[in-house]
Every structure is written in structure tokens, then in C-alpha cells.
Amino acid sequence: MKQTVRNCLAAVAVAGMSTAMLAAAPASASTSINKAARAAEPMSFQEVYSIYANKTWNWGNGAGYFPAKKRAFEAWSGYGRNASYGEGRWFATSSGNMCMKATWTSRDGAAPATTCFAHRKDGNTIYQRKLPDGDWYRFQTDPPRRSNEISKLKSGDFVTNRVERIQRQLDRG
Image (cartoon, rainbow, N blue to C red; front, side):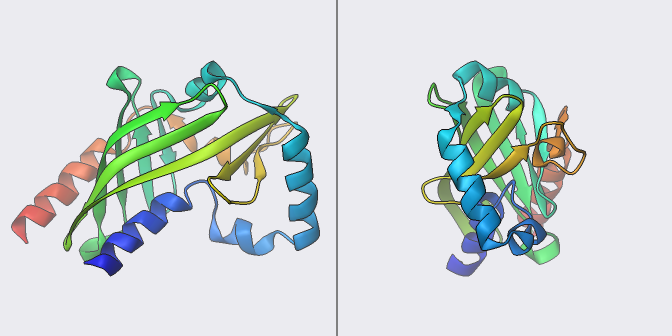
């Protein structure tokens, strides 16, 4: 159970950071991005809220949906026997953070998890990092590019149907 739940949490923990993105970033680039992000201003509650509200964030091996209503949070991760889903709440803070607090359920059981991301901006460039100790990376560049992580946020719910399928799959055992 611990390994499967750990896999579920890992999918959420790296939301916003693809493996290729992590592998491709040389240490010197990471250092300069960290320096630029630290010099940037924290985003406001409203700015962070507007990035996520009523959008689905596609993580490649899963996705999370951030409805504005009641700030519910719903997500899925993995396929087949490794599929899991999370249900809970999301929230933005006045210091530029966005957090997902959910119970993740898999074939092996359920476990709570909270994952937070910090957001800072310099002009139209947005930096993001996983808290508490992730490296900063460019979430949105100036000018924006289709390859920016923020581009993986799409208006609408592309999660609920998949979560319902995973729930049925887990109920069948």
C-alpha cells in the first residue's frame, strides 16, 4: 500500500514539472532562474486564483481540476492497476501559493496529501516551485510559449469522468 500511495503522491508532487524539463535544465540555468525568481514579486491571491480557477492542469500521467465552486479539488494519476484518484480542496494564499489538499485512493488504500506551489512574477514572466524546497522554474515566459507549463492548464473539467471510471474500477476490485 505504501508504495502505491507513494506513487500517487509523486504524480502530484511533480505536477508542473515534466521529467524532461528537470533533466534538461543545467545547474547553471537552475541557479540563474532561482536567483531571478527570488528577486521577483510574490503573486497576489487573485493572480494565483485566476491561473487555476475552473481549469484542468494536465500532468501527463494524470490531471487535476480546480473548480471555483467551494474550491473543491479532484485529480487522477496513473493507468490500469496503478490508477488512483484524489478528492479534496485547493486554495490560493495572499503570499502567492496554491495548495492541493486531498485524500488519494488507490487499489491499496487511501492516504491524505497536501502539495503546494509558490508563484512569483517579474513583468509577464511567472516562476513556480514546489514547496518547501523545489527549484524555481519558468511557469510562463515573456513572451509566452506553447511549451510553458501554464499552457497545460485548460478551461473546463477534463478530470471528473476519469475519476468516476477509476472509482468504478476500484469498486470492482
